Image (cartoon, rainbow, N blue to C red; front, side):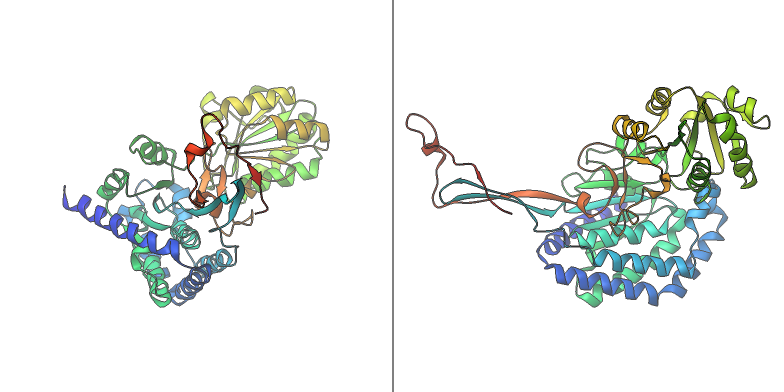
Length: 435
């Protein structure tokens, strides 16, 4: 085993031991640790901003990052203060551990209980966004999980400063420093992915290429999404001012986000009235429009869209536009080209809205709301470890509930399976009890 892999294995073994300790801590202790981390982050603001400025000034680190990545990387005092506020918001959430999900009397004196417990050790690989380190650390602590965090080289200095602040908070609360550890170096990712048996869940946050490489490179379960190809469909029953407001917010409020709008679908019945003024508003906001033939007939200055545009997460001010003849065609386009992330319909027709909500297969399906609401903080989760477009374990913005599992506790009085089999078998009661 090479030295880099040995170092990561040692970190994972330490994290495993820390996870066992975290799982036994009372909720009040984890709450206090989060408060200490938040205070430490505020005290470290000057050092964090200095480190971030050095990252932003490093041409080697920024090489190939692109405008969206640079935007995600940048920090200011308000963002770091927001991180601390987010940690405190997570602290205030109900304790996710020890919740009773089921109580069942199997027989007299034999009771089954299902309770929530931590997953164990999380391996998190993320790009560009230093705030992801803080969000995931907070959720891991609250849910009693240890975490190994690997950021991109572009944020090396920022991540070191943030982790130093977090470690100060852990120490102040008396928690083991191995609970949250920062991994560095490209070799550490491959080493991490080979630690099935020590790491319980891998969470990638970054590009499609990153997520796919991790999914293909490990036997550890992976929670992530490969694309954020989000649609807004303006139905024939869409109200014009609402449609404009939602589309502008979904595309321009933060175009680098995975929940930003990438393709606008417009019903042919309202396109002549809605599309030209909406296109003018979007172009005035700096959005490059790429449309189908019918869209360009209504907005002559629009660039032609290619087939690839319908399958691309641009992450910048580029928007595909397509005119469709019906709700059925809009749903078919979404299912053909969407990534299962977040889809929205704008309409005053409640029947059309309910059909869209029922039929569209995605982690988030909205009526008369911007796709940008797909976020753990906005959902009231305090933060998120990421967004999952998979359908097992967790889907959509993943907060605390996605970081816990359950175990069954069976309390008996000398009960034996043999008494419930064969001739004269004793019957089970299977009586559900209040949780």
